[in-house]
Image (tube, rainbow, N blue to C red; front, side, top):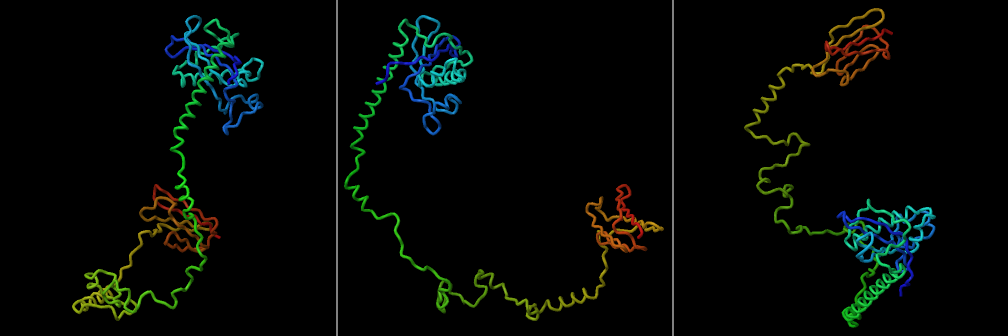
Length: 353
């Protein structure tokens, strides 16, 4: 049985979304409603409620159907019930007074929408000062809350009776057949231990052959043909050539003389040395008592020093594959290069050693 005593918490006034219907919500506490729970479904300790409030907690809540108010300041009154451990902290003396008022008001608005289908405007909520429970009749506050708790108790009893009757009806269907149970117990185990064996060992075919001298019998053609894996029409056009022996290279009789003549013509034709496209051209080379200045013209496509490979020795300058011999020995570490885009030329300044 539910205890008839109920603890009033606070009440607030709000307006529905239609802008005309005024609703007063009473937030009360009763032991029949569960305590606040953590995410692991454990009861939140008192120290946590005093320190952090109801943030990150699961708050059980019960909503009574709206009661139409014929007289007074509102059109409907809705009672929202939580555990007394929450409502007893909704006093001005508590450190988290505003926190509990704000959080429980938000929860009440959400659950009223879910349970009653009434959407309240959260911005128009006003706390009714000096009133812990608003009643639209002249009956005592405790009497109203006691009636509400009794109706909740009756509803819970009806639900439990309905559940027991349904379980009795389904009992015969859920009973396990004893014969079937014996068959299930006599089934072979899911996991069967296999006898220990060495398995396949290395070299198990060393003294045996998979097939005899005639092969597997899958192919009737000659086993000595190395081109057996090719189609028949392609095998007729192919010929095995041993590249290790040049004398074995087959040549057709009619083309042998033609090939030899072509080889003779190629041998007798003088080779013309071709100038590499990436060769640099020395346009000037001047030398005095202190420095040697070399001016070079780059090949086509070279517009900066980024793609140029420059190597300097005491007596030569090698740029890409172009080698420039110097008249005097130079200091390699002090050579400077400058590329002029206007005249498309590279100037190398080499101090004399």
